[in-house]
Structure formats: C-alpha cells, structure tokens
Length: 139
Image (cartoon, rainbow, N blue to C red):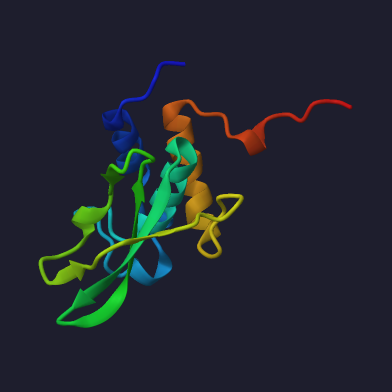
C-alpha cells in the first residue's frame, strides 16, 4: 500500500460526506453546498483512528451565545488538522480548543451509524482494512 498524502486523506473524507453521515442535530443545516456541516464529530474520530494524535474540542458561539461544539485533530507534532472548519458561517465563532481523550475503542458515544458509514467509506477509499474487520486467528 502506498503512503497517503494529506490531499488524499482530505479527498477521501470530502467524497464520503453526505446527509447520511451528518450529525442529526445539524441535518437541517447540511447541504451539498456545505457538505462539511455536521461532519466534525465522525470525521475527527475516523481521522484520529487513521493517524493518531489528540481530539480537540471547542464551543461554538453566535452573538455570544453557545450554539454547539466543534471537533478537530491535533497530531503528536502539535500540528492541527481541521477538515470541517469551513462549515461555519461568518456569524459563528469557534472558541479556543482543548484536548479530549478519544473513546478507547474509537466508537463514539452517539451517532454511531453516521460514524460507521463515514469510516467505511473513508477506509475503502484509502484501501484500509479495519482491524475489527480482519479474520481472527485460529487457536
């Protein structure tokens, strides 16, 4: 398998996003013109599984009122990758982020169906065989 480029990883995610991978509470705001909308949670978990690092979280505000949260990734080197930042409008402000531990098994506590579908699509595009999809060895 060839090494991935950040461009290939980003393309795999962008091609995998759809209304069916969007967080349910963001579905009304999701559109093909803003496909990153509501994709940050599943995207950041799948990316963390692929390349490691920390999950980052921040509150999102509009007119000084918290309207939600946002997730992205920080590599062990300290470089931050946010594949979904463009989802926010000019009136939405993403605050300072903090690291949060990913779930031990990388499965989210909610929106599992969206995460599983996104993970399946991205892994297929990158040629990744998920560890949980391998055949167990005989004992």
